[in-house]
Length: 378
Image (cartoon, rainbow, N blue to C red):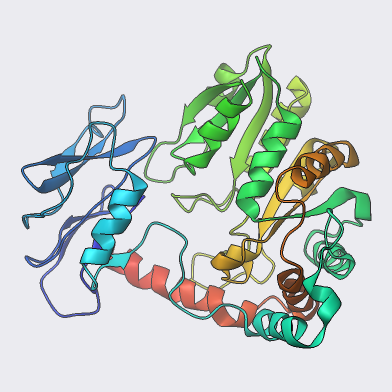
């Protein structure tokens, strides 16, 4: 979801619509744009944008004027505004703040960047191909990282390095799903999921998450399962709602997966951005479906340096899971990008080796930003 507004730190009157968490009115010189997917969509009329909340509940079927200022912008199609058009609109308003895409405006991991720079300039062989599965040092660093945070001993055959978490999701769906399968996705969701599933010839079955907490309804999940269901896609912490699955929720997902012999594709790229009700960051506090009893062999977990180390342009991710699926992912990966950039793999390896759970203060900064936004929405 996109939100473009004038700098929120400037003085000016603001009112907020707390029932949905979306701003009700921006200042007179503001412009708001949302590209919705799932339960929300953007509509436009005569240059004024509005947000429509799509829900079976009449109380949620509300359209609110979102930007009063006239905007000389491309007409929004009935199914939403294209990503390219939104990017073009953002560039026209240099004071806009983009709150949708995970796109930091601060430096990423200094440890990773310095190590990658050293590899680029001082180690010629770290500028050549690595094995398809990844640089040996990075594989070992990932094994060590997950041993610390998940208390699991991985083998090299259960880990693979990919060209971004997005490629990880893509090759995982290609490896796990075949035509005719059904895959359950919770909406709203990262909009790449449905398209990746459809490219496999599979059917997307959606289960809607309901505001304000966006916690999963296990009754709705059970109703969505059929004899053709193969995979359930989980995302925690959740994009875009921020819901992080509790221990109880993960145990219930595990019970259902085992009852129906389902695979879990778990997108956990925001794993280090977890805090408690007081706003304190939970160091290595993320709870994982792969940690639940008897679940590791039916879970593929996706991670990403884009989010873990705030290095979105590096396009470096990884997957962990049972060897049978990881091997298939390796084969598909070898026929697409073959290997991730070698010096960047080295940089992430060094950062993982040195990581103490603080991630150079980035999660604490995000927690502070969350507190400011939450107070503004009250």
